[in-house]
Length: 228
Image 1 (cartoon, rainbow, N blue to C red):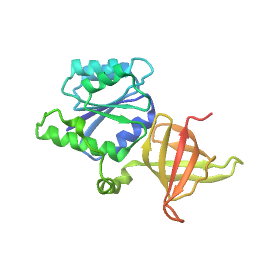
Image 2 (image 1 turned 180 degrees about the vertical axis):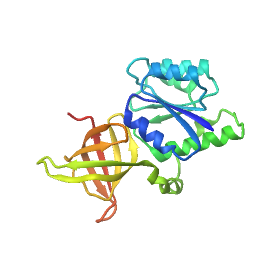
Image 3 (image 1 turned 90 degrees about the vertical axis):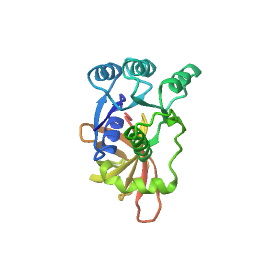
């Protein structure tokens, strides 16, 4: 069984990626900061690591260097939504196999893992993982058939206090440090407050936009999280 380490201080990102790889014969371990990540790589060997560059304690670049030193065979996928300095870019190119810009599509992350796993299974180590192309529309549609693996529950309330939805199912589509995209059959207007139940914690957010492919849905909504 292949092992993946997910390092990110955002619980929603850790949970979303974990659910994305559910059913893939992959063992997932998560770390919410750099210290937990360093402890994890001392205890286990991981085939793949999703690493956020901006952690609350130890910088992601330092964790990246440690990964390369302690377990050089681990394929590291760096995640960030911020502009990187030239020095950081050089470190990422030197030690990681891929960079994912936040927000990213969860199906794209699954696609990348599938490609790496196939290469590891055939013991291919040609160093060309950085040349991954973005999946085509046809490849994305094929991945979208697995949406049930990433279902969360949410409730929504209008600014006036009217309840719009209670324990309604939605599919996670993309995530970032401060927001997420949901697909649901229930229309939720911009300005409504979302309470998201992700299996471990409760996250609060505000709907910033809504779009629908058809009049009766499904609806894609953009949610800004941690709004006070």
